[in-house]
Every structure is written in C-alpha cells, then in structure tokens.
Length: 308
Ligand code: NCD
Image (cartoon, rainbow, N blue to C red; front, side, top):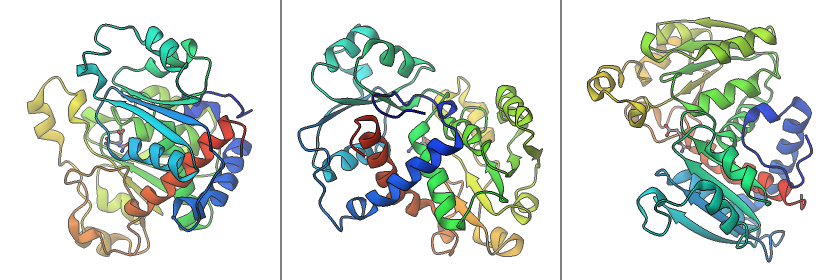
C-alpha cells in the first residue's frame, strides 16, 4: 500500500508489509506519544476532526497525535445535532472542510460514510468509525498492542468476545489478523455473531476459527482475549440489548482459574464486560492500548501526509 495521500477507510487496504511498515513508524513515534519529546513533523499542518457520533478517546487520540507532532486541529463534534451542518450533504461538507485542513478524521453512524467523504475530499481521509462497519485506526493500534504485549503475532490464538455483529473494532481487526498465522476464537451470544462476510474472509485465507460459548473455556486456549461492549446504539429494541449486555463478563476469578498468562484487551469504553478487579491483572492491556493509539495515529497521519 502506498500511504502518501492515501485515505485509510478500511483495514482491507492493508497487507502484511504495509502493517509492518506502519508498526515501525509507530515505534519511532512513541517518545512523542509518551510526552518524552516534543515533535515538529506536523508544523503548519491542520487535522480536521469531524465526529457525527459521540467519541472521547478516538477524537482526543487523533488530536493529541497531531498536536504533539507540532500540528494543529480544528474539530466539530456531535455534528448531527449542530445547526451549522444540518441538512448539508456529506459530499458538500467534504468539499468545504478540505479547504481548511490537510487531513480529516471522520466518525459517522452510517456504514460507507467515510468512503463518501473521501470521494469528495482531495485531502487524505481517515475513517474513525463508520457505523458498524470499520474502525481502522483502532485495529491498527490493537495489532500494534498485540505485537508489543506478546512479542509476535504469528502463532497466537486470539479470542474476540461480545458483540461481534455490530462491533466495528472486531470487524476491522479480523481483516488484519488474516495476514498472520493465528487461530481465532469467537465468543458471542447467538444474536450477536460475527457476520458471514468476515468468516468467509477467514476461510479465503485458510485461517482456523472456532465458536465457543463459554468464556472460561475460550480463555484457556487463547493468548489474547479481546473483549467488546454490546453496541447499545445499534439496537432498535432496547429489551433485546438489556438481555444481551452482560452475556460475557471477564473477571479476576475467571481469568485466574482459566489462564493467568492471557493478555486482556478492550477498545473501551467498557460497560461492565470487564470487572474492575481486572485492572491490576498483569495481562490487562486496555489502558496500554490507549497510549499505543497515540503513537499509531501519529504514524497514520505522518504517513498519509508523506512526512514519515
Ligand atoms: C469503539 C468504537 O467506537 O467503535 N470505541 C472507541 O473507538 N473508543 C468501541 C465501542 O464503542 O464499543
């Protein structure tokens, strides 16, 4: 993949070589992400963040990445309810925002919205989550975290737990894991299974996967356990959500019994899927993911702007 001037809309765009390249750049960005050094790589550049759906960490992470590299940010949040943009098409907004900024991060509730935006903006567009579809920057930081925590990706067994139907982070992550020699374990209620299209992508690459309905059993055979929140905002029937929200909960008792060496990940926010007593478990990596996210987004921004 040629990063320069590219839009990053889906993890489908990545192959193993481009992933490894991004990891190398992210590693070099770590001192800036960790506030050890002040960067100037992005001097004179502006990131526009457009968030049509609520977000704290993803937006903060993109904006922090830009600012700590010496760039600036302009942002609009909860745009769907803002009168400035009311009724304006995504295409028009894209044509306007490209005049202000050098790179755009967009989050929007509809699948495919980031693509529409990219089709209409001449500057790089980074998808920060388009409905239940994709969330590439999250999965890039997840892969980076797996590699850092485990020292490798090949040979691992990785469990994805919770809302595999609407969870865009596990959709994006699935596409990236295909480039490695891993085994996948899927843990979800029947109603929230991984969509067929992703299972077909595993099959295409000959990637082994199995569905397990017991979290303890899944934990026993997994090196990494990626927990997710049941995506309340995608449900039309809230009773259905209530029924499913705590289907799988990771607790200290469960993991101590099943697998003391496991790495526990979560894109956050957690809403009860990981009990608080997990926070000082050695393998709990969810807050470390947040720090890695800044370095990875620094890498994304500088790569698409041809500055890495
Ligand atoms: C994820 C998202 O928005 O898809 N969170 C995030 O990026 N911080 C996961 C989630 O909301 O459950």
